[in-house]
Length: 166
Image (cartoon, rainbow, N blue to C red):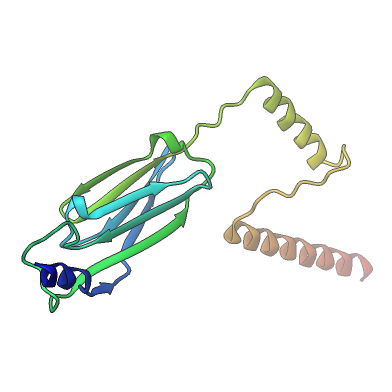
């Protein structure tokens, strides 16, 4: 009897990193974690006050009598920081066909009268009416287009200048 208990404790685990896939949506994000061979009871999820989501699991860890010291079991441990823009009390998880799906709802940003006034003030600052300079976010593609247009305008101005001198 004691040998059986000692054999259980000496069981070795193979550490692995499960495949994860984030799906980003406007109102929520979904994290899919592929865990083939795992059962729902072997997976543990925790979300702490610091915004850290911890996902861990041990395959065959719940008293499987058929396991022996020679059998290799799998386990994983994954921690990730979840955005502050989420509703932590509404995070949900579903496990089906070896895929753990974790839905992380986002907070909806509502414009209040104060935030509308702040936006108007920001627009004044953007155009030089205030002391703060705001820089709009540009994609690389739009920035490249602006550079090309600016270069074309400089070259056109130079051409007009050269024509006026002659």
